[in-house]
Image (cartoon, rainbow, N blue to C red; front, side, top):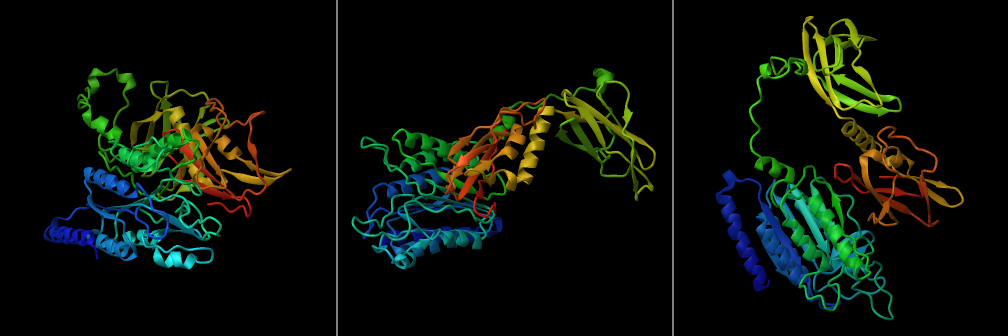
Length: 507
């Protein structure tokens, strides 16, 4: 065991003993392991991986992480370092693992290469497997320690380290395979997409000590108020733009199985802005407001206030009200606009009241303007409750409704057909385009790297597909699969979905 590792283990022992003393008051903590491997013995050496690990270590310390930094790890040292990292992780912690060095994909699995990995040629894949660290095993270790949030970052998408002039290389390739089957609570980032290689520098004049990915990712991590997805998206855009300047294709990719938004540097920008605003002034008393425009608020908070869902169809809007308790009559109006109108009844008995169910739905015209719907109801005792104000914003309601439909019908985003060649149809996305800001697709790549243009949204007839709208594209006949990522109007991003052309099975 090297002196460096002895120091690491000793420091971790102190940290573990301190955490034991304070175990009663334990709250989730942030722990990180960063590894950089430059000095390979049997495959090409690297220049910046150790610098990348040091930079990430400094960055994570600024974000409140307890950080282990390990450099130039052979197979035994790599294993011992992972064991030491295991010992400091406790249930509920946020664990961050960063690796810079050679990585290699064999049969869809990713291996992190220690510095003593043997040189290998065709047919010797087993040598590489036995001498390397399986990336999926790192994920399993963090899951076994019950980390609440696990973040894995791989700046290892470099050239095939086993290529030799005049020989056949190990069956694999440059770059790493996508980690699409992650457990809940795991977020992974790769410095380049499948079959892409990551740049150490932009030119011979580029004196930056870090790789193009790490120098960008480290800065984005420190941006206050950005969640992990936003950090990954901004990094992807910036790295891709820098790589384009030297005519290189490098698009970092991330895979998100987080349950909650994770902010490593400060709180969400909206929350921060809200906390910085002065407190709202006290509400005016009802007597000071025009009586005609003020809905009568129920006296008790527990009163059965309805909620409403909005759905847009060709004829206009359907609005459905939901009540927690039994009702025997419902009426409504647009705020300050005439008398209340009864919704009527449907031919079903409510077993709770033994009376016909009031119709919970109303219709609004397609050109209905934003406003407030006032709803009141008669409870099971015969008392009138309300009116209750419900805000109606047509544009927001349309986007929310179409977003919900897109999420529920994700397997229908694309479809394929053989007709004078292979065609991909995206008419489903066109039908619900008002909820979409951008569609990105990838052909035979897990990284959606091409923008698919959709027609503009027409709020007057949002689902209309008119003559002249392009609904399909022709694909190369050998296309095996496509990836799709949606950016919604609110700025959130969907999971990357994969659609296979051969057997039409999608996920």
